[in-house]
Length: 399
Image 1 (tube, helix red, strand yellow):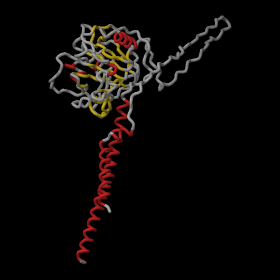
Image 2 (cartoon, rainbow, N blue to C red):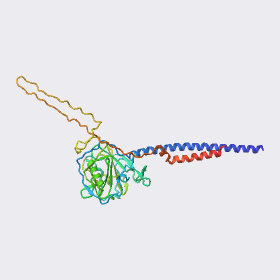
Image 3 (tube, rainbow, N blue to C red):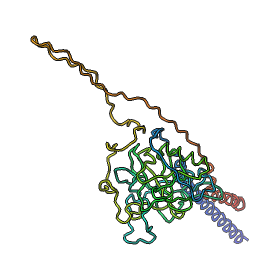
Image 4 (cartoon, rainbow, N blue to C red):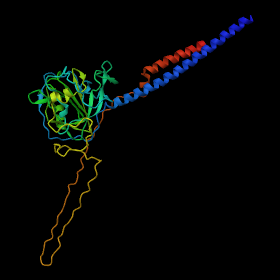
């Protein structure tokens, strides 16, 4: 009897120890899960915040309000069956994008010309009037959830390519011109406008809307006359839309960066490929030899830049203020033998006039709260299930 009682006590003791060990292990698992979940939530929240920021066009007060440019229009082969303003295929601000740490140098095919266009596509190396573009940032475009009609922050729209968008160094206010290509769309022009806002424009290298290369330029200042021409043609049924010729101004840099994207067969292309988009068949721009991609180019406004006189370029606040020279009178010394009339030389510097800056009203975009981000996180849901299981286990196991 005594031995049986002793064995029962030992079994109960072992059961209590086992229960205690399981309880400690579960608590450690909970702590680890909470830490991992917190890390993932913070990481996703940061990515979500950066991605949501790209949904808003660049706020720039330097965009011109007048222009002396004129634009022709070309009839359409086919017309869109959707509103380009509310479609993520034409309005990339709906998708958004995020910066990635990829190489900023051009990528060579190294003799492999599979899939290379037999005719030279529009070359991004001819975007500026007097200098070779320099890549300063790389981005990926967000994927799109077509069932629920919203973007998927941090998920690549075209996983086959590491980069979808490039940021090019620019001087604020310098003009952007129609690119040089191996063919035209109507014998003269190279680009057909498909969608335009004050800060972005979508071209297609075709006379129709269902083929050709779509070229997107974002966070820029679209020429006000070109924007007015597009809005007029769009309101009149889109039977015709404006066209751009090689070398023709279509906009201006709104900051020190111009973003652009090229699509082909629906995919967002990696536009770093030299033989496709920059130096097709050994093509070189007409201006001076391009600098190496890693060379630092001083930021300054070129003196020979052909900016229209009606375009307003804001004063750079970093430049020293020029104090006007006061009016001076120079009176020669009178000699006693000769009467010399008094002469006055007046130096007058033109005084700067205050130019009113246009106000840009940004359309608010929907954002998610931190609570929504946490509750949608799979780690949070897993921790919730584990917590319920542990509570049930402890109620059953512990006396």
